[in-house]
Amino acid sequence: MPTSKRIKKITRKTKETDISLELNLDGSGSHNIKTGIGFFDHMLELFSCHSGFDLKVECSGDLKVDGHHSVEDIGIVLGKALADIVGDKKGIARYGLAYVPMDESLARCVIDFSGRAHLEFKEQLNGKLGEFDLELVEEFFKAVSTNAGLTLHIELLYGTNTHHKVEAIFKAFARSLAQAVKVVGDKVLSSKGIL
Image (cartoon, rainbow, N blue to C red; front, side, top):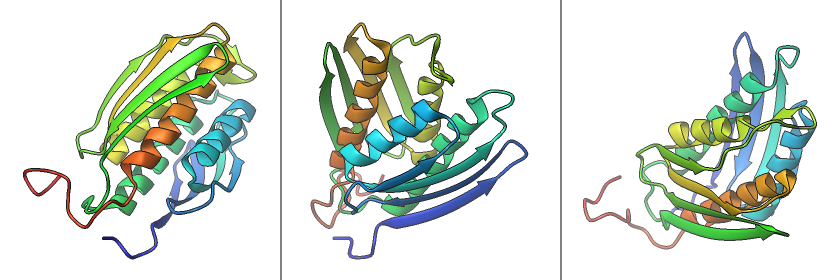
């Protein structure tokens, strides 16, 4: 069973973004998020709260262009932090499943922390909420999946209010990921003995 603290701090600087992120999988859901994109800050705060992970994110990005580089790069860094923390995945539950309602909207997220990156994203999001381009929701999860090595299935089953749809998706992701990284033993959950 893993005994070391499951905490990772990563900094990443490119010509487009300068990011500092700290993730604690055994936290209390405390967060300090500053991405420069109000709606995205709100979604990452929800992710922290509903996963129980402590999360600090500071991002200075080229928002004069748009939010794409900031959102995608934060997904990259979050994915790398997750991959580093779980390492060989010894002891974790590996799988997670959550259905989360947000008023009239219902989202489902299913995760396999398999080491094989794959995203199925079943919802077409277009337009903006505040200054946030909704198509970036999928880009964020693609970056997380690719860099964490997650098989990630996200589906918005139904809903009408776009804010509620996205909120349900982020909360479902948070809850299913919390299940997948929960420490349940001291072995890798695979018949092959390795993931």
